[in-house]
Structures are given as structure tokens and as C-alpha cells.
Image (cartoon, rainbow, N blue to C red; front, side):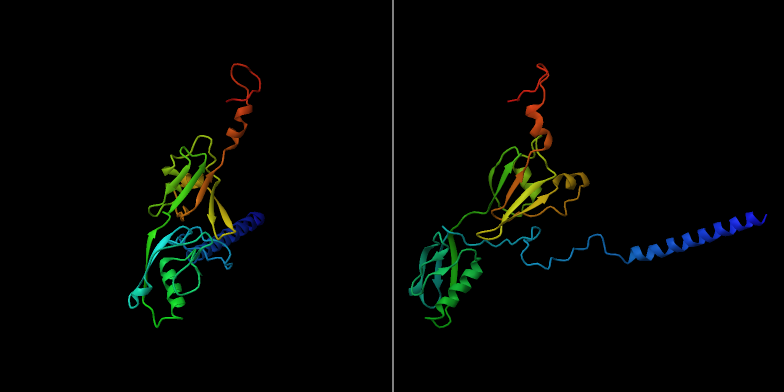
Amino acid sequence: MKNWLFLVAIALTVMTAQLRCSGQSEPQAATGPAVNQTPPASSSGNNPEFHSRDSRYHIEPGDTFDINFELSPEFNQQAVAVQPDGFVTVHGISDIKVQGKTVPELTEALRTAYSKILNNPQISVVLKDFQKPYFIADGQVARPGKYDLRSDTTLTEAIAMAGGFLDSAKHSQVVLYRKVDATWTSAELIDVKKMENERNYREDPFLHPGDMLFVPKNRLSKVKPFLPTGSVGAFAPVF
């Protein structure tokens, strides 16, 4: 009888401890981070931000633009061409580098340069001929090639524009290449398969002008040429 009462006491003690633990876990879950909380930005300034985008056009070699001076029209210049090294030659001042600048940044650079010979110059810049934004789709898509980037376009939308995945595509490891500067191109692996399976496209990055997406082959397509054919029964390449 004593043994039985002892076992009952132990069981009640265990149940009480479990109830206390379960009661404490609920407030902890309520005070945790929200599901949609944006992760903290990286402390390193060297990592490119794949999920942000800048819609302003950046000047490239071969572009041309007009420079208009509101108070000094004698300095107006038409069809100023950006040279292959990114510099432009303009009247009255030394050559300045404009490659990579947006139009507001270019306007400010010209205003600063002309302030050496003009008093508070009022300058406006108008792009005349410029490279239209584009992206490149390559690898295991139906229609590889260069496509115009006419509006905000995500990676999965770009793949659809290129005809979608081929059966040989490994869409769990799509590579997004992005040119960071003249000497560095970064890359990020995108698991499109996971996004499609979970129907969650919050991690679907927006493309930047000049981006290239590459869809590699899956493992089966790599070994398929060496699989035995149905009629021969031996290993032979399939063409």
C-alpha cells in the first residue's frame, strides 16, 4: 500500500512539473520575433543586396546626353558621348568620369566642376541615347537570351519570360550573377524549387539591369547520355 501511494505521489509531481513547463512556454513564444520580421542587415559593406533594387539608370560607356545651362546658354552642349573609359569631354573644364552615376549624380558632378568657372551654375542633363536595361537568361531554360528589363521583374518572372525550366533544369540551384563593379561580379544561389513547393515568394529577388541568371543541369540529365538504351542494352551515348 505504501509503495502504491509513493508511486502516485511521484506521478503527481511529474504532472505538476510538466504543467508548469507548458505554461511557461506560451509567453516565451508570444514574445519571440514575428514571422515576417526583416532580418538585420549585414554589418559588412562588401556584400551586395540581392533583395533590394535601385530603379535609377546608371550612365554607361556609349551613352550620350545633352547639357543645358539656364543662365549661361553659351555653355550648352549636345550629344556629349561617354567614352569607353567612362569619361566625358566637355567645354571649359577638364574631363570628368561619369560612368556609374545616375542622372542626378551626373548633374551634381557637372555643377561642382563648372562652379570653378561659373557662379552658381544652373544645369540640367537630358539623356539622349542610352543602353536599355536588360537581363540575360542562360542554361536550362526554353529560350536563353537577352531580354529587356522594362519594369520591376523578379527572378521567377524572368524565368517565365525565358520560356520556363526545361526538364533537365536543376531549379533548386539557380545562380543569379550581379556585377558589383568593374572588377567584381557576385553570385547567389536561389532555391526556386523550394519557393514553388512552399508557394512562398518573399525571397524572390528583383533583378537589376545587367543581371544574368543561370539554370544548371540536374544530375539525371548529366548521366542520361551514358544510360543503357532500351533496344541495345548497353551503355551508349544518346544524341
